Image (cartoon, rainbow over all chains, first blue to last red; front, top):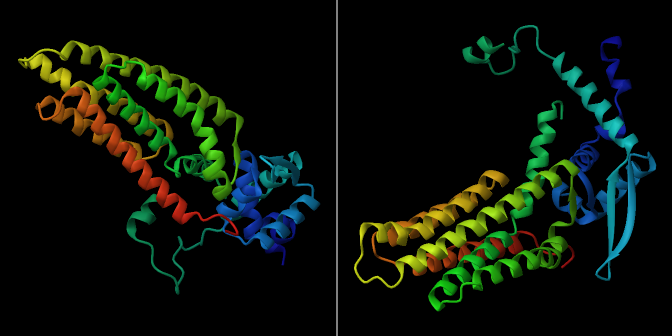
Length: 122
Length: 197
């Protein structure tokens, strides 16, 4: 199991696809509201709410509720802790993917063969 | 998500989504249309007035139309300062170009015989309006503004060929961009229904 030790080190809170999408979006903006995250991630309201609650619980996301034109608006922001966790996750996954090249140049017997151009680039 | 480039692509996509509602196209069309109408009616400040109203109206319309559908997002500080500089430069360039169009129009108007210079002058409005559209395309990366630039170039060519006067070519360009903006806005409203509505 030592070969897959990275599994244990991975931040599973961010590794989940929906939360990874949320954190990625919040990483490239200053703040975003619930509707924006709903529109960009394509999640349902309930699903998005539960993922955001988990991220907030871990201290990765902070929430601000305000009233804009007599309508409630919930604003989300990635915390410093969230930023570091996301940065760590990206580095981690980057290293894992960089090490994942097949020893046979990507040609697995059951997989499609790479063309010559791809090989020469490698 | 393994490369910083991925986040840059995502950030650009979020930024470009700002223009999906077609409001900028619509308001740009209104400004050009007003400028053309101003040239015909001899009311030089009509375009400037429309520009002022459009700049004021844009955030209000976004708040009313776009935010309930696609939400509110505050872009990163670096993006905002970059966009602020670009917006200032674009407004300055736009005002200078439209002033040039007005000057050319006042020079061309009134002459009954068309000299080659008049022909170029009559097409200048469309060609000059294509420049801000190209600038906006370069700044935002939204290809639709390239179509607007092409529309203005066609109007400029029609002006040069004597099919349209300078005033009418500006007016036609404005109407075309306004129509494209309206189509884009309708498409946006159709593809982004109000959540729960």
